[in-house]
Length: 376
Image (cartoon, rainbow, N blue to C red; front, side, top):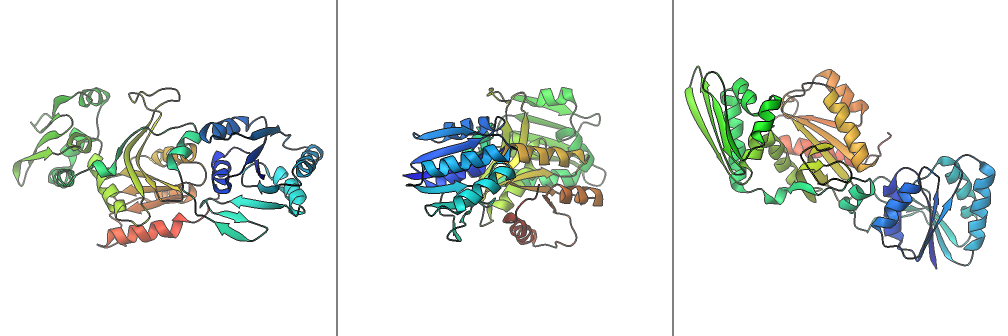
């Protein structure tokens, strides 16, 4: 048989991807009391007919060595792979010593780029499909509420441009009507149609999902009306949705963007309701080997936004995922430092060093970081 022995720690992704890459006849899960739920998540995701679970103490070297030698003897006549990508270092060291001596066994490691390294042959394997949705399910957060980028149309692009023009026409009033909203206004804009007005008569009105009208005044230019009409007009009008779409359009031209999703909502576990989401991610990108999470803000108002974003990336995508924070306004030195400390790629469309070729600079920035291994 092709027997795959996999050490199981807190990260399910390398365990799952190792099994997908090896395609074994039998799987042996070495797990602790704490990582038992990871085994259950993997076996639920993959239809493994032949497997066994071996509980093991994390720190006692004698029990670790005894189990390693027992399993090595049990499968001495089979073709064995040992996946050391997950699990504690105490297991990795002792299991590695035992199985490295076995002529029928290969020690393998799945890195964060989903490349499987065989330490016996020193060869790499990456010709298997990366499944983004499976990864979300493994971490207990299936992604079922989102808008595929492919659903946006050319008329949505026109709406985006109209909203950007409205923002320039009267920055303060545009933000007050569409972005900086009180709890009462938040409740109101969830309705299928309605109208918000300011004391000077500036207003926004909408009919979900495809129509919005914004009326703004300017001391220099008087009154201007902006008609927003497209399939995603209302979603783009509020909460800077137009800016999220603008960033998504840029990323859509990137060679590593295989699948782009906007307005990604993660409800609480066991619930399908999006009225009170556990978290929302502006854009999620499948790069073909890992997930890129993208947060979009015209301006960072509080540095805790960075902390919340990094926590969400770790919880929903695991340690191997990448994070990108894009702003329209320049970032402060404090925010740039916080991004660096959190392994977040920071990118401002107003950075004077970028110049006019923003897309190519963004792609270069992403590619410089995409295949690097996260340290935390």
